[in-house]
Length: 592
Image 1 (cartoon, rainbow, N blue to C red):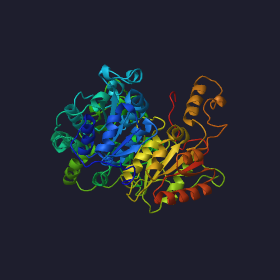
Image 2: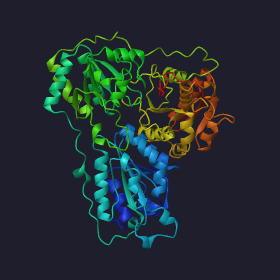
Image 3: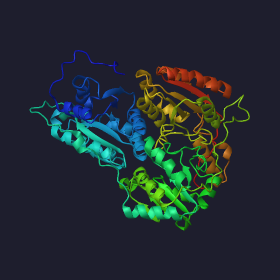
Image 4: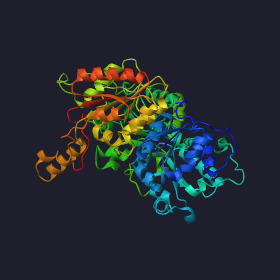
């Protein structure tokens, strides 16, 4: 990407001349490597500064065709890097387009530095009509309930202060998106004096907090006394040493482990102490493991009470002692219910889960010798990679997972996204980059953009990025592929195409059963058919090589191998796989 979109006739670097140069300089000082954007006149001054002041390098701009993808790409990048890239949204209208993607990143607790624009705030500088409808008194109000912080600087010096604060807030655990709105009039103000930009290293985020000695001792006592401990690993970092400490903690304590397919890979899922395959919902076997435990330690598990509600509605009567290690409460507010229902906790610990594990492991190693894993057979609980009975003539959703596992072999894949039809019982996660998790807020159109962001962060890593997308999700986000093609960001996109909004078919079936009405009508207003969508053609229209529809497993395997060759050569590839409608693990429906 270094030689792509280089400005010509750029003068030698000189002093900042315009207020928008200050904002651009701050991105460089903060070591922001990329900035995704969909152009808009509200930030034309800032755009000029990125090009003609910075030279479109450090950060490099990524042009997108929709603001939703602008934010989703930054979201996907953060999933890999655990650090923010920047994204820019045009005025109130572009911001409103991107709000869903900001909410996804918020629910996923990912750091994003979002920049926007309004105005000119000074009415004298507004053009008739257009500048008036694109100016808002408090643009940050649109997303204040699902960002960590927002600002609208009123001077060049305030831009420095605001962007330092924004970056600090985004990168302080628990992470989250932040928003800085740049007044269009301010951007285009010529500087009449120099602006002091300090060294950002003196304004860095604090280290993630650790547990107190009392909390650490209490948790060690609980684990030492437990006969059948269960560890729930939820959110965790991408650092390999943090991964290794989780494994060491489990193996020393003898605990059983559960993980969620909603979160990024945090523990080897084929480890003998990983009690059941990762999933969205608790299987009967998982429920047995939970009820058999005398201690449950949640390491930043998301929706802990929802976990217990799958066992009993009276969660306060949970027999096991419960410890919960999390900082998430720092982000809870009264607008969004993404804090979930209140769980019963005997030992709450306000600390970063990975920091606490680094504290806890040596304490336990001194306290007692390595324990046997009492509830492990010594073998992986994952199933053999076997196709469905009719795979020669059709593709079941689980067959996509089986095909990827069979083909993966010794290759390093980074799975950027999966559908809710993903079984999770075949494809093991071996390291922190094997799987990048859910889209956060369950907003459609996220998958393609997140995959582009993952591809950006993984570029030149030697790993192949693979993404399995639903047809509805892909259709709403298809134009994100143009950015992948334009910047040669390689990934294998597999559309698990059931030609329906199938999750909602199941909801309509549930309602029909409750009301004693015909379930045969569940498909009306749900099926995406007649005419069928040509996803391969849509991908090719974005400049991405594609094939399909593929309708049986032998053809799917061959298509994946062809696609991987293209990906390994540095380009994206798409496969439209027609799957039989259904889910390996059906989602819960209200009333069930």
